[in-house]
Amino acid sequence: MRIDRPLPGPDGFGFDFDQVWQAYDREHPGHGLSAELQKRAVLELLAEHPWLRENGHQASRLADFRIRLLLRRGAIPE
Image 1 (cartoon, helix red, strand yellow):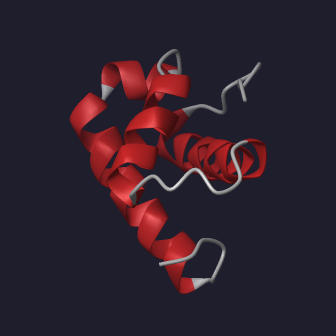
Image 2 (spheres, one colour):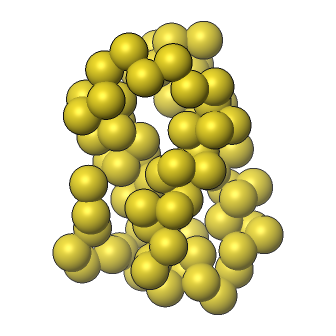
C-alpha cells in the first residue's frame, strides 16, 4: 500500500502507519513476520512520508507505540 497524500505531523504519521500496517496484513495474509519485521516493512513503505524523513528516530518510537495500541485493540494478533 502506498499513501498518496501523507497526513502531516506525528498524528498524521500515526494514522498513516496504522492504515499501512492493516493493509499489509490484508495484502499478505499469514505472512508470519514478527511485529518488529513487519514494522520495518511498513516503515519502508512509508519511507517518503515527510514526518518520517525528518524524524526517523521519533517515527520508529511512535510506530512502536501504534503497534502496542493495535495489539491492545485486538486489531492485530499477539
